[in-house]
Length: 218
Image 1 (spheres, rainbow, N blue to C red):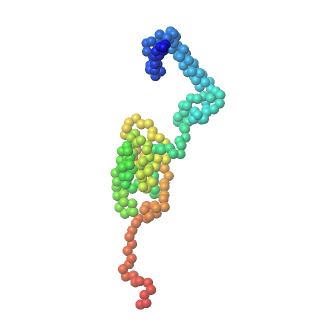
Image 2: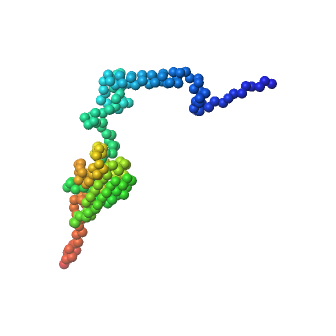
Image 3: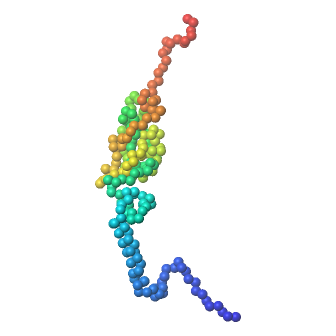
């Protein structure tokens, strides 16, 4: 019976060793052809972006047409890409109609913050339905991870991230800490429950003692 020739198994995932280098030509070992092809791709894009017209649309996938410049650089701040409606921008403290913050210093936002970037010091009102207010309210925008948990945790709709602006570049860390005066901005917000809790102080009025019940025959 004839014996079959032995076949050596070849692993395609294995990196080529010194034995495979002998099968390559001198140009292939220097990667000249691949280098020339890569330079051709770079030159083609360079000429197209240099001589082609610039599409003001910042979305690359939406650009169409022959000779369109595909450079995605936006000339900021002259050109700005609009943020989507759900964009979480910088924080702001929402004011009431009288200009004071809606915040009641309940520490819910600071407790829910996973980055611990909110610092609050509470004070007390003298004769109002609201018991507390923030004497000091600070947010470190460098530590903020823009999760929005503070907005969701606030029971009074006192903090929002609807400014539509991102945190500015600063030269030192203290400049990235925004205090209550810097955060209190934007249009005031009023809810139906504010009539009792905000505008009118809650007072307990006792009925007069000498008042006789109605309908008496005397």
